[in-house]
Length: 127
Length: 221
Image 1 (cartoon, chains in turn cyan, red):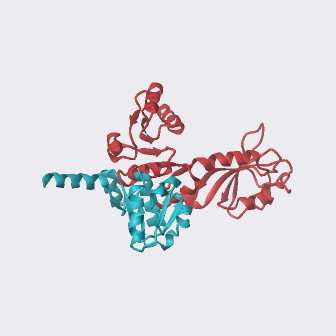
Image 2: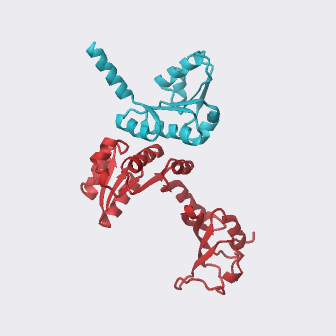
Image 3: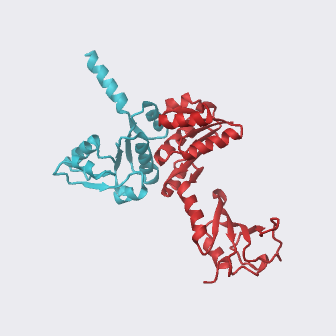
């Protein structure tokens, strides 16, 4: 969910490895970022909407990743995928480090790019 | 009591005013600085400019000592996030979310936020009651009991007009609680109270039995 730079790149990588990929976004022009040879499905739907997720055949999915710009959208979609549709592996991007920790306590697997990037920069500086 | 409101739109503003009038302590968290300023001009220093889904902002707002937490932004995902943090991280006793998309109500319930107000459904309900041939308004839903409290207007030509309360075959488990008649005190209907067109009837009915009620109290057409 979310065909921004990260979403489109992840879709490209998984698709190139032969996985079956469906990417959702509510902005049609965002799909321009997908490569021309992308074999997956691009779906103009919201993933915080059960019907949208059903159209993406969420019940058959092995994994669900939420990487829109908004923490709350990602968290809501990830919880729907996990708690309502029972997707085995669910990861969401949560920019706010405090909220990432909180969602962790709810059993969500979140990644905070803020923390990851800050740590990476620090490591680089220390080298 | 101390109440935190997330979202300083129309609902947030009027809710804050209401709570203040009732002697409660209130803080409205709103992202838009202009809206915060407007609220301060009207209500005094009751607003905090920031994102009510951020734990740092909520901590600053003193959420640990809040008795009520009400999220009324126009975005359901924001309301969900804010309420989950209030309930699960800070154990606020009363947590209520406004729902903008009726489809989200059961999602909120499944994700632990049971107390919601579906803004669109409420508006629809009242409009429907005005234009419908069978005027039934849902007043309150007792979800854990599977009951609805409804107000039914006995229209001209209603199948219930001229009948006694006893002879109405309302769905099993229904209770006719009050009859409101123009120019009279509200009364608890006796079994032999005869309904008249123009009466309003407050009933307790099992959820989902609205159609059955219509066959008893609607018009025959």
